[in-house]
Image (cartoon, rainbow, N blue to C red; front, top):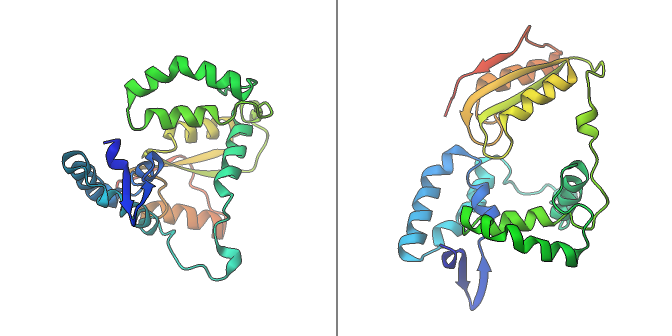
Length: 222
């Protein structure tokens, strides 16, 4: 499988990263194609199906559209900016204050466990865990939120979200003390695009300021 993640095109080698595969888990509509692409890559060593997934993933999530002008294009440093924000927001970082050299040395210890968990995704996830090494210490601001008197807020969580755990939605609502949770019982990343029920609650809240009287559940519409 690792060999199938590299594609030769015009003499160049273009990697299909584990992140690309993870993105394909977000929209449920792509799961059948992802399964077929993975099976073909493993059986035949042919990664062509995997390389078709990323643009299809963006399209399925409603993110693939022609930019209206230059300012609408995703900045080239968007990934670096996201990494910086994630590092600043995480108080329990791996090797928080270690220098890059020390981090590399210490990383050898959990590397085997990461590879054992997944030969494809393990090294990638370990790499992400190391990206904050040497950066300023993360904050625990989120943990200090304790019923701050915030106005009523609507929070949406998807039970089968592969990227953001539903428990985080419930935890945030508890910390705010004024959160109303709408639980989408479906699969995939986020719920607004995939559930008319979720869209109804969100639209009424954003457009009319209406919140349900208590927590609500939206059925799977996949």
